[in-house]
Length: 387
Ligand SMILES: *Cc1c(COP(=O)(O)O)cnc(C)c1O
Image 1 (cartoon, rainbow, N blue to C red):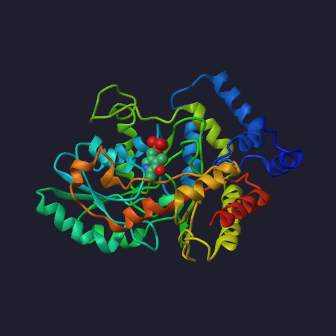
Image 2 (cartoon, rainbow, N blue to C red):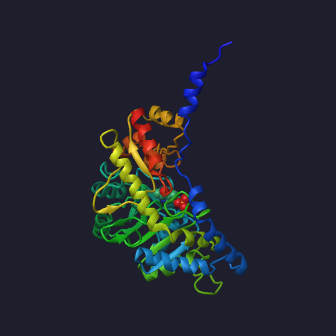
């Protein structure tokens, strides 16, 4: 019988450090629990679970936060994008340009309204849809008999896309512009926040997004009165005002009052949380600079740091080494959109070299407002050792 010597056991125990998950929402809940309990109790007392006063209050706060005229609380980020597409009358035979490197929902929403997603490669220096690649994609879509109708840039990992460039392209080619800001609520470009960077913007309040609910939720942000009226009608079965007559095709797309109550509590501390995420990003950048590919950063945009994603060689080995130390990591995204089985027939043979390379190299590290400096240093130590 082989027994490990006591010294080996002691060494093993001494390096056993507490786990550091990719996302940790438990600490935030503990921090805000009192206020959330109070707000949820108030909802139970008044009982207006559909479009109750908390939804109205949250919409006003979200609009004020982003500096836009309208915020419409909706059921999820996916539904926000679908309703924005419906409000823009995007449908059968239309092409919608989406980045090749993003979450699958960006393409699925286009298919959900009957249109065709056309994949555009991302830029190596931003990871976001490359404006320079768009004109060729528009020509290719025309060549396939599709009517170019809309551009849907994604603010990947929380960093705003080049919305000014897309606005110019949309104007030049007569296209609608719908921002998939599911990951970037709170981010900014120049002096404008996400929500004010595109004519209509969909955000997600999925629990792990920068502003996360305790379930599904989202919002549509716009300065356009007509688009706001349209999405308000669409989220309630196409009704306008109080009547039960369907003025257009709609859906059940409302943010519920319970989630609005949770989000009000979280929005109250959100600016401080964004600052904390930025501090952690700066700490990671400082520690990891020169050792691996750092996320794009420049002075003009302020990321919401939904994810801190580096590029590493031999990713599986690095990931396993971090897992050994109980550090959670994520692969966002392991497969570029044109290689998803659900979309592959739309993109037969298409090559998106930057999207493909990123999919092979990206590794997301623990990030969140409650991560401590010591934990971030431990993540950096482990990553540097693994590299
Ligand atoms: C999360 C996400 C969505 C979908 O948001 P849900 O609220 O989960 O429906 C859409 N697009 C992107 C880029 C996302 O990250």
